[in-house]
Length: 314
Image (cartoon, rainbow, N blue to C red; front, side, top):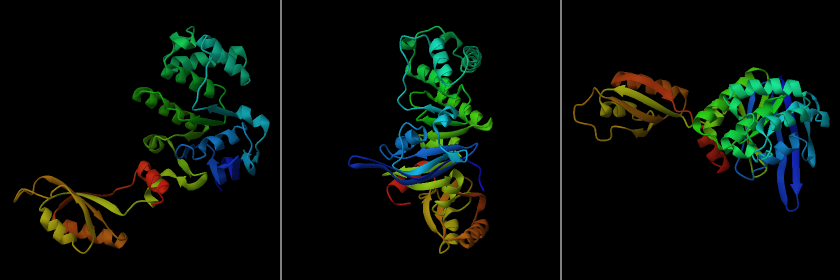
């Protein structure tokens, strides 16, 4: 059985005239990066607030490390909300120490750890600057550090890349993966599907208050493929299409109007096949007709799966 750090079982949350979560269950494996996905208003933030004990579920239970989630567990969680907040008049270093001490660190230990992180993020020169002098991206670096500083077992990041340029977003992705590799479990809420593919091991997609899709990212992408394969070849395009006729459907080609007699250019063809036997037949037929260079399945992106799932066409 998979080792779970957190489990939410049949969680529901209702407000006046609105259901935020309706019988939602999630299993968060220990030592993973878990993507919590969904459109705006789907219920992601409500679930995060329940895990953080900011609010309580109306029905269902949350388990942390095999036990019912308790007030003391909050210190084992680091939470970076989408709506960040720092005291603008305080100096950066003093404010970071203040938040670290709220999480139980001594001033000396907080200062030591902060100096290491500030050097890692190349922001040591910010220590004595006031928060109001920082850009949005600068402030978010500080808040990320404060969130992870006490080395919690569970980290929750809500849209962590918002406001970051590509270079700093990549830095943050590497740090999140590094935290996972050092034993942390990460819940990662985002609308950025490319980040999901790069960072997440597992996902849950919430839409209209329901869990509509959960599982391993790679397994989901393969399970929801459309039996599309891309061929790259050199040879006669017409001969290839003739050889494949009756075996598969040609979906796209880069050679609709090829130059007569031109057979040396590298071409591509996308086909849809019915099953594994048809794949083997298509490969054999293509090899007979042209010089086949590659034959690979086109795995759908998480962005494509997200759109199809929310639109009910998955």
